[in-house]
Picture 1 (cartoon, one colour):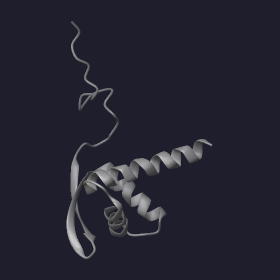
Picture 2 (cartoon, one colour):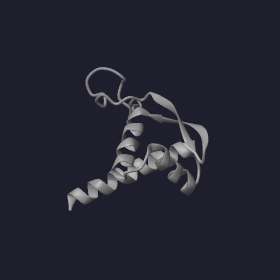
Picture 3 (tube, helix red, strand yellow):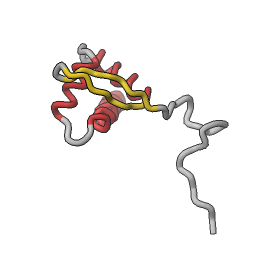
Length: 95
């Protein structure tokens, strides 16, 4: 019997997924004038900042836009926005 395969590499040493951080950072954002906390990994915060810059809007405005259209939890909706944005840009550059 073979040991189970671990799809997640060890946290250190060769083969670990680069310098990616799995640390979740909680940030406060304003949605409709109310402060709320959102927990995301730093890489997602960086991509959300880049998306908001490309759209020429504040990060708070982007989060509020996602909040108004989401189904389910806000952190998941923000991660999906990042994924969809990256996929759209990848598909666009592949053409």
